[in-house]
Image (cartoon, rainbow, N blue to C red):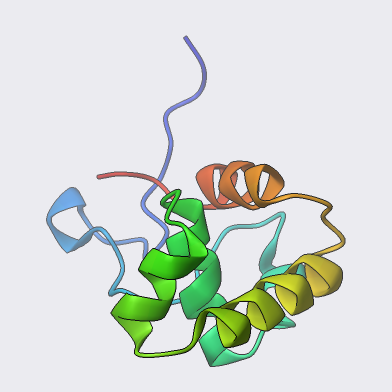
Length: 97
């Protein structure tokens, strides 16, 4: 069993999870996540929840093409090469409280 995980907000478990679209926080990824625009962070959170481009587009009232562009941009800014890598990055940066 690994070390206990902490809530990204520093709050008690009742304070988790952060609001939808809020940037996940943690020591290792703060610099990379801070490079994302607010919309890219929203898209990243939804990618991290394994949602498809169509699902993200419907939820955020965007076209699928716009979502594709946001995903491409956030992958480039984060230095990642796949949606799965986004899932792992966000998993390491946040905690399900």
